[in-house]
Length: 514
Image 1 (tube, rainbow, N blue to C red):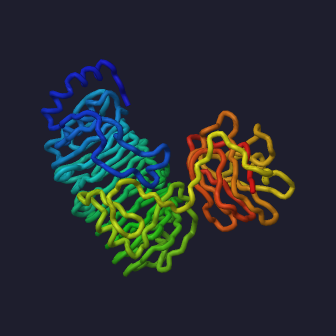
Image 2 (cartoon, rainbow, N blue to C red):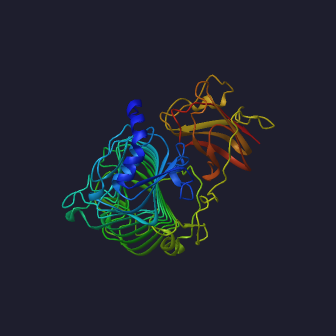
Image 3 (tube, rainbow, N blue to C red):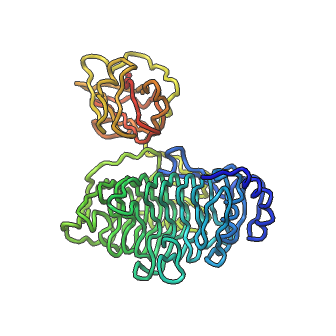
């Protein structure tokens, strides 16, 4: 993300004249035309707000979109681009500037951050031209149609993906879009929604993906495993051959989606990937979940799904369908709040909310559509907000004493350091996530815990969950260390699970109180 002061001043002085020439209208800072906020994994890692709080411009061509990006003071200056009309190869040229890195024939969001692109008015159609996100963060794309993007044949677009993300992309929310092709790879089309080369914290919501050989992938090969934390919810996949998505490594949460006519395979979890699959409706499809075309296994947790006229192939060396009676073979912790619609009503509620031009309608959690005045507020589990400076609960720290012990996962240092009363020692996982537990020889009532980070690591812990390790029930979820309270629960083991952090966490003490 480059910022050259001389070029920046030049771009600012000439922005108005050039903007008028290429079809962009500038306005002062205003509220975005969009309503609602990001959901799913896009809410993690600091959240996804796009161009909120910045200038809003109107664009009618791809060149105008590029000009709006290049006219910013810097590559991270917040910007909302309202798009109306048809964007195509003929009206999408490269524009140069200190705050952009664009290319002709494709809308290029490269080496930038804090941008929203939203369709307005009579609609926005990206015709035979894709939206590519590279080395970028905090990007929002809403209410647009991207159709018939090719990687070969005429015309040719860079890469062939309708929306493609790669090379260090973080925090992207794609919402109420329609992505469609007119065939498969043999006709020159590639994926509709692809993520690779370190793309993380992405949500695809209330969207339609149809008439393509490939729905999308997370990871370009069995060695591209640095991607993940992707949420897919309230989307309709229709007449797709495979990859809904193909998940190589990483974690995905798929809930309340409607899958119709998946012709060869659907959710393909492989190479150690984990997929949580909740309350989806699969219809008139084949092999909708499993590990396919590889002997490198993936995993899934399933609950509440409907399988309507779904067929399953036989198991083989490189074919491991989850059906005909899908069962969970892993558990997947979800760090954010969400509300599930009943699977039986998913076809109806998705038909009324998903895709561009639907008024940005969302589900209200009761199988009905509503205007998106806010993100869904009901949560799958109680959410607690810890205090920055822990205030000790009343009573005795139950983690100390002969009756208490512990355990941990994700390797790292000794779990015993969290229950020794010494703030100079700490437990740490080998990476950015992991879990540590306190347990007792007999059932113990607990209503609060205190998580103390080691000196020099305060603020590293991000998202977390507190679990009743006896039953797997989530007692609380939230972000940041401190004092955490929840309904008084009698249990033999309690677990603090770190699901996100800004580095390697260091827990000095895991205190428990009745």
